[in-house]
Length: 295
Image (cartoon, rainbow, N blue to C red; front, side, top):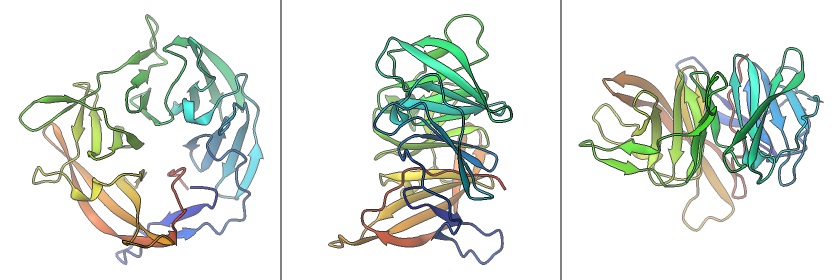
């Protein structure tokens, strides 16, 4: 989360002293706040530009707090239009080069620190910044376009549109058209925070969206708000959002819930393990990146 980085302290003890605190590591802010971001191990990779195309790659080592510039991509990209995902330890960058017919895909190997052009795909020239890797594929989710890129596909197109539906109670299908605020992956399941609809998850077997519900089958009410951010922590789903008091235009509270996930038949059920306020921040605060890194 930038320009002022904060980290969520989630102790594994029973104290449940969860809080959002400024990151004490004196690392410099990245040059492109709106760039595409992805994590590999303990490192965060900032790819492309914010409002203007850029071929830059910046790498933040969260252990040492150092920011270094990596090798440049061959294609300048805008972060808000580029999708990123990690497959077999390599970073795939899809689109972001502007509105051309071709979507150029590049792959970065963090071990050798080299880029490789993976080829061209055709899909209108635009990917989605709301992207994540599931089952060896990169899923891209936004309001009207939901696609999947399979680098192992040898025949036919590797970038295809996927079915964009959710299954509601009683089996009735309804197209998912509301704004997506963020996505994340927990235990190889793709979750999306959909404005006014709460948290949905994508059933890759049936190729449909399903609503995250509690054990009683009802929607978890904490997730009906918009402007959320999500991440994975220790196999649980962490949801963060800002909420201000009525009439207060100076500060707002950052709310947080930790959710354990269990499969029950064809559903995934969520149990709220903890909820509360983890910080009070200026009203101008917003979530730009919410990423989970390993130690």
